[in-house]
Amino acid sequence: MTLLTGSRLGRDAARWGARFYLRHAGLVVGLSMVPALQRFVSIRWGAGLPDAAAVTGEAITAASRVLLAYMIIKLAIVDDPALRPFEAEGRWRRLGRFAGRRRSDVAAQFLLLGAAFALFDILPETAIGAWVPEDARETVLSVLVSAKNPTVIAFTMVWMVGVARRMILDAPAPVRAPVSGTASPRD
Figure 1 (tube, rainbow, N blue to C red):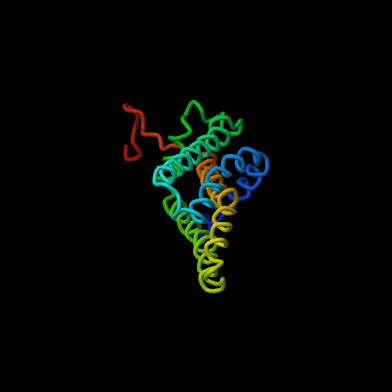
Figure 2: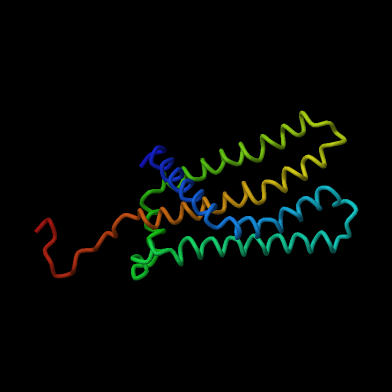
């Protein structure tokens, strides 16, 4: 397998992810608004907040992201009729077989994720540092980070689950060991 097949895997997962995101926008955006609000408040007024409020906000943010990941996996993998034929064999076993036999395709997902991180995280924050006046940076950054939660961060979660889903669907057939007592190819 090559970077090309890994890129196709990522592309197919992203296309599926876009459809999933739109179909479940209420759930995805709704659960993402909790961290969006927390990040806005934390960046904008964090220095003036009591420590307990900051810790509580982080805990609620983490819980909402775990819940979002759970719901995406449930809807995309556990409850998806397209994956039902693989229940007997085991979806996670298929995922592992794909990862074991197509390592370069899996590695390509980390390259794609790294590129997305650079494009949607590093570049915008660098631009804010370079182009936004010092007195407005905190507000602009808080708006940016808040906007990324229901969009970039949530879509990345959907996309990565989409990669796992695609891996389950595209897993190669298992290699069967010869049945004992049968002739080997050398016989």
